Length: 125
Image 1: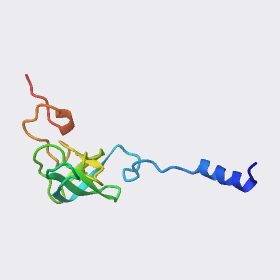
Image 2 (image 1 turned 180 degrees about the vertical axis):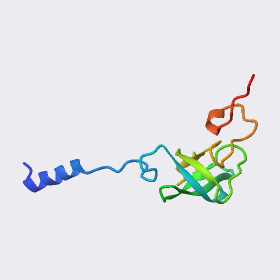
Image 3 (image 1 turned 90 degrees about the vertical axis):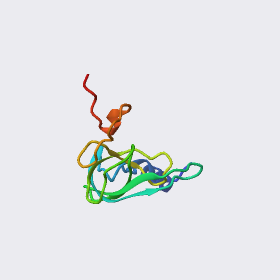
Image 4 (image 1 turned 135 degrees about the vertical axis):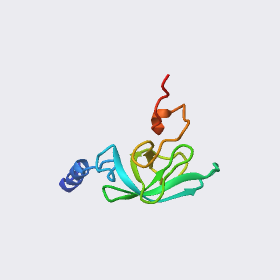
């Protein structure tokens, strides 16, 4: 038999509110951001490469680290970017990706596969 204080504790646990997953986005699917610094880093073991990442300031005021997809990029300080949620495969702490082809973040030239992911227009026949 449980006491009344034990029951009260259980009720508190049940009614505890959860914070939504992306508090930095304030419930939105993407957010506009301004690049603070674009740089490179290496992935965790056993992988080995030079991954391109950028520190960006979201329109909500939060500062996050974003992964730059695809080959080559034109990001410099104060570039405007559209950021979405998506973890980088082997970079700890990198939970966001930039959407290419929007604002100052240009789409890679000559891309034929996975075009929509990188914002490349289809070739006209």
